[in-house]
Amino acid sequence: PLRYMDKPSKDGASLDSWSADAGNTDVHYSSGIANHFFYLLSEGSGKKTINGVDYDSPTSDGSTVTGIGRDKAEQIWFKALTTYFTSNTDYADARKGTVSAATDLYGADSAEVKGVEAAWAGVNVK
Image (tube, rainbow, N blue to C red; front, side, top):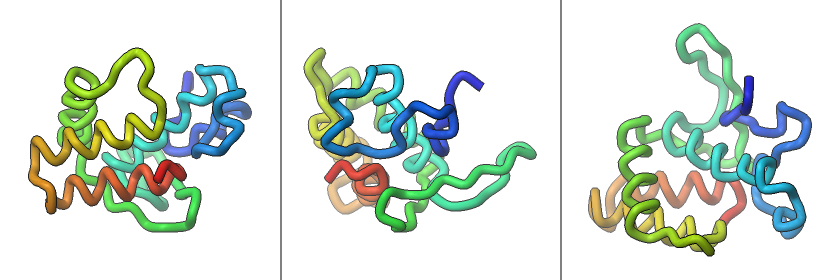
């Protein structure tokens, strides 16, 4: 596979979660943080089988994330990308933008907003 969204580090170089060193990592490998966020948001953490493939997606802090589904995750990401992200968006800004997008789409106290917050926490973006 080109990338592993459930655990990006399975490729031997990509990052699973944010750390202070993430900015010193090639963008193709530091993008693993966003890939992992999206997987956690859509599918959730832990072990599961999807279409006959086994996955085990841990979080950086050992927390459990409940996925909201691919369709809702895609809608949130697209809204954030087209409304809130700029060419200078970093991971902290991406968290703010996706929380805002989820709030716009589903309401401030929605399960979707809680899912976005939990998925970012799962990749150490708080």
